[in-house]
Structure formats: C-alpha cells, structure tokens
Image (cartoon, helix red, strand yellow):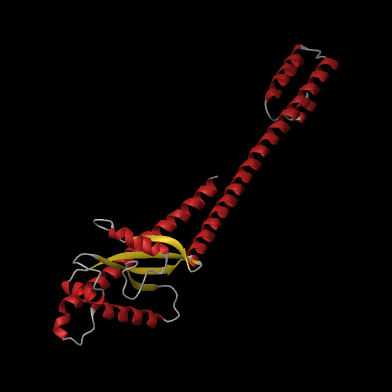
Length: 257
C-alpha cells in the first residue's frame, strides 16, 4: 500500500508540476504575441496602405514560425477564429471550438490549459482568448465580414498551442511504477531481515530453555539416585540445583562434586 501510494503521489506531483510550469510558459509567450500584434495594429497607418492588415501579418508570422520549426513536433501554434465567424482558420476540433465559445460567455475569461486527445495522440493544449482592442481591427474585419458587426473588446478568436504529451505521460508512468516497485522491494528486504532476526532470537531462546530443562532433569535424577552423605554435600547440591535457572550452566562443575 505504501509503495503504491508513493508511486501515485509521484505521478500526480509530476503531472501538476508540468501543467503549472508549461501553462505559465505558454501563456507568457501568447501574451507577448498578442501584445505585439495589438501594437502593430495601432501603428499600421504609419506604414501606409501597402502594409499588411494585422490578421494577415499575424498569420504570416505564425506560418513562418511553424515553418522554421520544420519537423520538430513538440510545439504547434495557431490563431483561430470563433466557430462560424472565422475569416480563414476555424477551430481544429470540437473541444477547441467549445473552449473559445465559453470565453465569449465569460466576463473576464482566463487562458485554459488541459490534456486531451487530438489526432490520435495525447496533447497538452493551452488556449488564450484574443480580443479586438483597436478600432483598426474592427474596421478591417467588418469590411471582410459586413454582417458580423464586430465591436471593440469583442472576442474574435484565440491563440492555441498544442504540445504532444504522449512521451511525457509514458515517461512519468514508467518513473512512478519504477519508484513504487523499488520502494516495495526495499521494504520487503527490510521486513525479511527483521523477520529473520526475530525468528533467530526466538530459536535461541527456545534452545536455551530446552537445555535448561534437560539439565534440571539430569540433576533431579542424580540427587535422587545418589543422595548426599553429609550436610555439606546436601547444601552444595541444593545450591547447584538453584543455579540451573541461569541460561548457561557448566556440567564440569557437577563432575567435580
């Protein structure tokens, strides 16, 4: 029980540590991206009409980031629109769409991190809500979607980061099982050693008690068969009989009498 409890404790402790640290790292990165795009939206007019709109700038930046990572499959970043109101990129699955719509129903939505299964593997996903902070964003989106009627501070979509977590989950499961098994073996060996010591002491006490019983019987038979002829020998025999209660007795003493 103890080894199983320690193994489970280690597993959940490692899982909670991963969630806490990875969530904070990804949320900080997404806040930085969101602040960068918001700032670009505010100063875009200074670059003239040829400057790309913020959504295009953001999409190209994310594509360039993902392209630079190449075959590295440990980080997937995307910006997606609200379900049914997206311009180009819709949520990749129902879980993501549900999370984004839940943000829209909250007064002060917070980023959400969770483990889930997507594309046949375990993912650790963080979704960060993205709001329209600049009027230039609203004007641009309303031109592209005349019927949407976007307003400042509306939830327009979200940043999403998916990190494959299958390898991590397998690793901490193996470590937890190894820790529990090692503790089980160690406790078993300690218990075996203590048991052997205990039974060894019991055996020694039983052997000593058996030897004392044999000596008592021998002395009793001797005193009855050869009664002492003088008071001095009687006293010696009595003293000898009383001394057999001690664990160790020397039969050589009896031979000398």
